[in-house]
Length: 547
Image 1 (cartoon, rainbow, N blue to C red):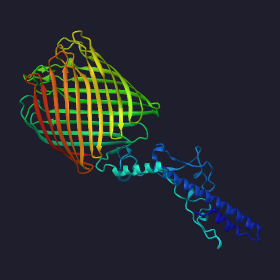
Image 2 (spheres, rainbow, N blue to C red):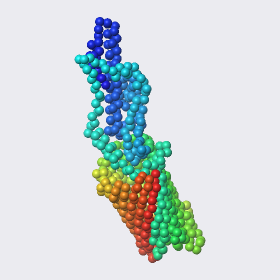
Image 3 (cartoon, one colour):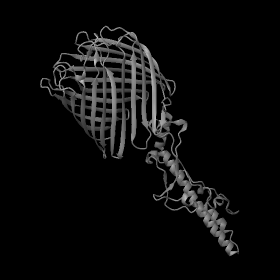
Image 4 (cartoon, helix red, strand yellow):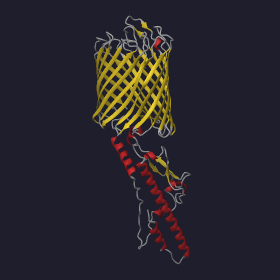
């Protein structure tokens, strides 16, 4: 780009006795000088916009196609370089995705947008060749002054450094998924083989070879606003040496978040689950020939309002549970339709962000459980109403300890006066501690009221707590150890059940699509009811193909 002052002086020296010729040359020089100045400003502004987008991409709205510029019309580039009504040049954005990398949900902003002018007039404009010519004299040689790149502030330098770290730390073993429109779909299938010492989960049960097949699909949207996520999984255990021990299992949910305004969003969820009952379950009067299926499905609708430091959430849940009939050892069918029920729940939470590290809240819950049959087969009306209140906080301490904890109290009242109210303290926790970049400890705890068919008992207060430690020996070799405890205390009944599980697993990621894995799980059931204690060890090794 030429220095305007140098070109102007060179042209003044061209004036001669011919006034008309001199005047024309002056006009021509002034026009070229103006064009050069505008071209320089346009190029400098374009460079600044690109550097700003790289240094601080969060300040640019998703899908933004305008680089802020002056509102003056460019005399050389015409409408192609003219400012629009909002004071910005019309440009087209090109987003580069090298090697088909997924959206920011996995790798964040992989590449900064590159802005290029779209109008062909910019390259065929009048006097374009003159701008690249030499206007100089022997006293004033040509000068080329390139516009300087904008200097980044300390904050922008940190953001740029963080962006580079994200690119460096992106997991090269994470599956990329299939892109269907604006949705990324990540399917996977897993096959394991091994041995189970007691697949029937009964006292004195015999062992069997074990084969497990599992399929899963994950969904993730790539939208500038709103979000759609999904996680679906289904599996089947096959034990060829023990009849009646085969069992399916599965669970899944799909969540949709709609960003109505910057302070208000709506969440919807659809979920489902498939489990089986143990043959010697406390809710089955006699041993069964196979494991009865249990179906669960439901939906939720929630509204989140978060003006400033406050946040308010109102959530409604509807859940349905159905029990399949059981086949007894003698071949007869045991009807379980009296256990089918629906639950309707409403939750309200009010919180305040004292700081990003501490966000206290209070929560109130109210629900009703309605059985399909007014009385179960023992003659009890088990429909009930429940209330609960909790106080808790969301935590984010030094970005290494994150999660949520809450304590409170809950109580259930039953339609049948013969059933005593069920109540007790509630604790809930979900915490993750990144001890080092390679080691993570996760703690989970929950308390809930579970239903039962025991005559005279309203149900049980069930407490669960689990601890998991994960460590990356290599970037693609991860080992995990876990321990969990579940306690069921049945009201007005002598039965007390405790279940302990310990496990270990290892995953070796060969590449983005193939994972070799091995696992061990020990389960120990301890109860005060004679004949219901048992132990089980499961050993599996297999592979998972994912995309």
